[in-house]
Image (cartoon, rainbow, N blue to C red; front, top):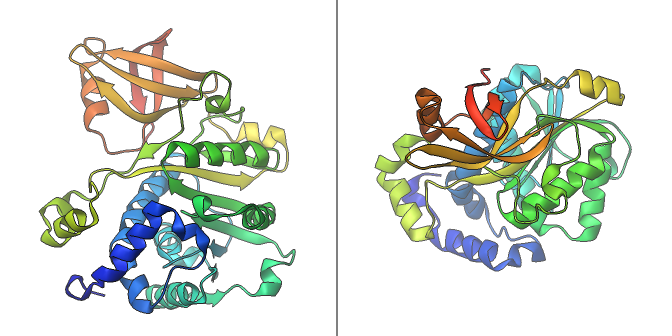
Length: 335
């Protein structure tokens, strides 16, 4: 698919369905043209979110220790292709895909086979979906607001069979808090790799924090703002190309609590959302093992860090030097 051959009516219909919530009513893909046009545009924007998540996993020194990948609810398959490309196709033997739309599963499998010709690619069978065979790396992307209770229960059964889970969703308040609640349900069986910097209960879900939600922002490639095709797409779709909010979970099966704790670096903090910058200071919501806190960084305390927080495109994972709620300095975690 090229920009010149985009199926604009299909993109308009898909966009309307996403905004109106009708996407949850069932399969919405009508043709291969739908999927190809989506993959080049909306799917690519989702890919940029996955790129940012994967960069954070690199900062956390995490890599999958399994050679099989299962992309559940695959859509055009953009998530699996991003993950496999990031870690290297030679690290994996097989990719399985599934979507409630057979058309989407066909597209995702074909695209993956084309991108990774040495990888064994296939569609998950009903026997696999409802069986008890172990799953290696389970990929889930932008599905939560489309799931009814029965579908979510089926997904949770697949998660229970998985060695590791990478799950990315839109960064809206409702979806993020729902994902956070699922984190709590899964925490007894999994170590939280990211975005959390600890294995404690999620502080955002604690009483008194109802107005907060765990979300982050991915930077789009800077060159798209000079690309007339992307500019036209943003105008036609009515979206801000600069804004890519997302929430996510990276989970890994842990044999016991001691193993999970030992694998979690201490002293790390994760900024929630974006820092706010004022002339004399920056302010941000911080999450770490002690809970949530609104911290301030006086500009005079560390001018370089003050500027970095305003300009960096890296995941906002830091080690702070603090005096109470005042940050005196700090360093970004380097991968």
